[in-house]
Amino acid sequence: MPATHTAPPPKFDLSSPSPTYKLASGHEMPIIAYGTFRSSPGEVGPAILHALRTGYRHFDLAHVYGNEAEIGAAFRRAFDDGLVRRSDLFLTGKLWNSDHDVDVVPRACDRSLRDLGVDYFDLYLIHFPVAWKHTGLDRPSWGASELGSTPLIDTWRAMEDLVDRGKCRSIGVSNYPLLLIHDLVAQARVPVSCNQIEVHAYYARESLVNYCLSRDICVAAHTPLGGGVANHETWSAPVPLNDPVILRIADARDKSAAQVLLRFLLQRGIVVLPKSVKPERMKENFDVLDFRLSDEEMKDILALDKYVSYKTNPNPLGAFLGGPDAFTAVGTDFFD
Image (cartoon, rainbow, N blue to C red; front, side, top):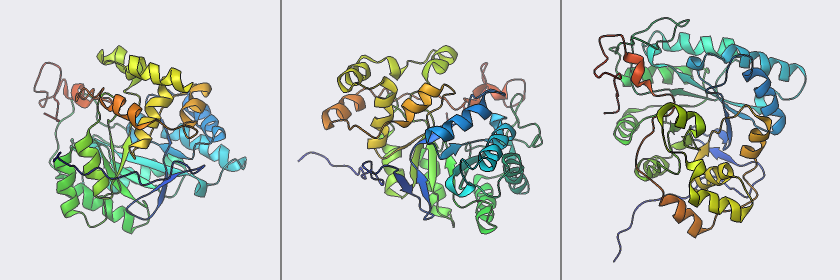
């Protein structure tokens, strides 16, 4: 008899015109988000407005990206123009590594909310499972970063307090491996609603994905295209967008390679966070609900898994350089 394994089905209906994922908190999250990482000053504000006009209602944000004030100005313009209301949006924020201290957590959340011009986050995540020494909210640590002393569970308790105070409707984590998220699940009072991770055609992470889904934890892909050209240029990482299997399926479906990669993840029950400031790419990334990959095509894409992380969000490896906690010539990989 062949061995069996647990592979929970998707928790959302891809035949719906606007599918959402019901989080463990009970709140509904749109399954296609607009990512704001690597969005430069001056371009992210107009990009947000165009994303809203395209139909995006879920936005993935982070203090360390350095663009929340500009994004907040775009949201205010959208509210004032009647394009959307705050209640129409689902906003995900993230707590940076150097803000893990229990007394800093609420101040970091308040700073992001103030910059964005809103009263609450729909979802707030611990950005990485590591505490660095606090360097001030105006200077999130990046460079000569030093490891801090706050245990992850203490940071989580401070996050739970944000829910109690109405600052966040749901809380979760990002970049947590299975052993750490299981440890958190065993201790959490407020349920872990999401784990936002690197997952794409070249890094399928079936164990982690299926564990999370089995524990009612939403999995969100922060690099659903494998990092694209930017990651290839930065890390010399192979690009799934150029894979012959993906290109063959895209050609047969009359879709782009990006649409095939996004649809692959959605059919696995994974929320996707594509990023682009180009209007045509925004629309393309959003239009992935009008086709379905066959079981054979899904198997062909799963077979591309290289079981290798390309550390793409961004890689904190080099952030330790110049400080006492840089343990190799290229920095410190805390996922070792």
